[in-house]
Length: 389
Image 1: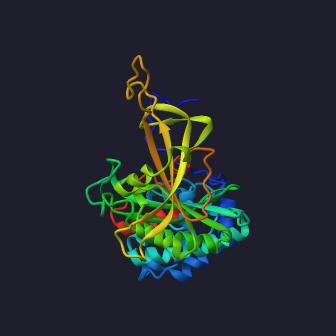
Image 2 (image 1 turned 90 degrees about the vertical axis):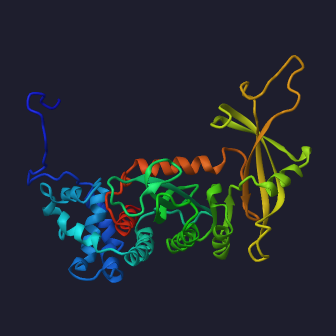
Image 3 (image 1 turned 60 degrees about the horizontal axis):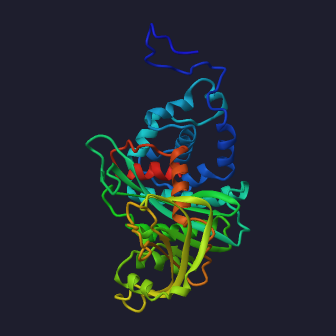
């Protein structure tokens, strides 16, 4: 079956009163009700004026619309198509939801964060979204730039990706037996560095994970963008271990130079991994560790002593290494760094955690993420990001 080419279709409407287009919303909305979403929103949100009336019902409508794939305020009309009104009560019109969002300020976004913390705890009591019995849970922090359109987007700018938009921070918690669950979000200017606001995000994520029932050891994992004293201090204040990729500065280079030749341990990957920088497939490598004190230029309270774990991969790309009749004179290595905190387990039997983290982030944004941030006000974009999470 295909659309008629004789008469171009300019619009389509699902208006049969006896059919519903998103029957899957029934269990999702019922679960949100048992977890107390609307009650929590009514209790914690203080949006002034008529825009804040029945905040719980409006938050519930927004969440339901986003679960159904709504990508803008206009798309929220899908909740009123066909027989949806016979299944759900209290559905608000798209214009009403738009008025509600336009009244948001940054303080309301923080109130909504408080709702999310409590809602996730209630959700964990009714659904096994987080494996609370696992001895180790992983808290992954990363960011991405989401595109915006138009000339009146507050905070929009060009960041490291070259895309004009806003910088969205995400923190997910996962374990060996549970999929990643978003526990904290943040939104900054598109031109802002990844580390901006990351320390507070880490603190919020740890608190939310604990309130959701995570009782074992929590390990923070992040790439070199979050290699800073504030982020590590936030993790240590909450008793969280860390594994953060270090930047290769002079102190790190000197520490690597102190590793003895016999201190390297050979590892082999069961599946070859493609290295973008070397442009070659990697199936084996070597790892070693050395004591290291980070942020030595700071005061004693800010310095961090831990292990510097280094992985090195041999550069065998013929475009980089010249081999003559005598063979290769010196092996060329490329080093990758990680700084787990004391007693933090590091497993060299697979690729570094950055690859898994980026893969999970791609999955999250490919399945139901806000593909764009249509609002012109930063607070409303923050509200949209938090609701999606």
